[in-house]
Amino acid sequence: MSIQALGYVGIEARCPEDWAGYGTGFLGLQLAERSAAQLVFRMDDRRQRLVVTPGARDRARFFGWEVADGAALDALVARLEAAGLPVARGDAALAAQRRVAGLVVTADPLGNRLEIVHGAESTPEPFRPGRCISGFRTGALGMGHAVLTVPRMAEALGFYRDLLGFRVSDYVTNPFHAYFLHVNPRHHSLALIETGQAGLHHLMVELFQLDDVGQGYDLAMLAEGRVATSLGRHTNDLMTSFYARTPGGFMIEYGWGGRQVDPASWQAVEMRSGPSLWGHERQWGSEAMRAEARRLRLQAAADGERAPVQVLPGNHRLMPGECAWWDQARAAAE
Image (tube, rainbow, N blue to C red; front, side, top):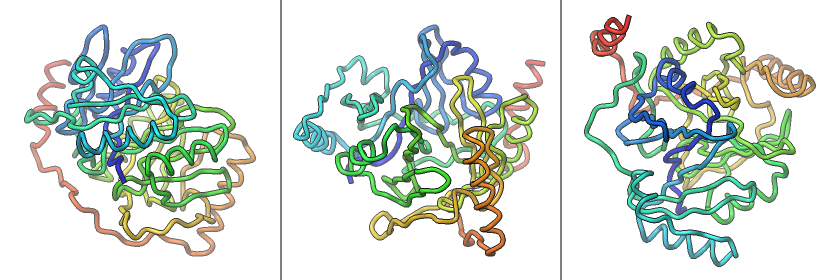
């Protein structure tokens, strides 16, 4: 497996300044750079994880997928070129802009710009969240996951699975058709939902503490129309989360408690009891899909389906005074 993690995501926005408050005050990201050309957000020791640039549309602009080193990048380029796919080497200016040692640029069958990178830059400067949270679960798991809508499953699935080396974690056919794929122990770093059109469905970020998610839910409830999917728990990755609409119209899943898999031994299965054990009432999609999702949740409850107890590595307990700098900054601004 050559792709190791989702390193960063670029968003094009008609009103990029709308992302400044959303990214910091709601998501808890750190606004690391602010200029007319772009907004750059941190979520850990990496110099950038989310990049927002001005543009004519609200959409995903690029996805940065990481490989181990230059040799792994060259091997992946050879595989893509042998399959007849165009690949362009990123120059030094682009590498400096993306804060990586090297990269190539290609596209998936949906037209999404993919940047395959190695040597992402970190910084010793501590991560300072935009609101008081315990932090994001990243590291070797990457920044989270991306979920793409696809016109037809077969072409997109073949590209990511057979050419890029993503592995299927599981899939669902009801109440919608979706495949979930992993590149590291995170249950999925990518998912594909067949909807008849191409686009970005949502990004997921995972918090260290469930209370961070609950407090984020409280904030989301204060903004009319922000909650797109209510608090709930997924059947496959066991994530407890809710989905919030972004200034760009797509969603961000804000979650905790995601399952880890062993890539060497994990066996893909069809998830027949639907996408969620409880909650996750959707404000999007057809009424028929939403009704079927409700039916599946109620059936799972009647069958006594429960998530297995799991111990999450690397969880961090917030200590008194740990967010004192944030409180002081907020008081100074008021």
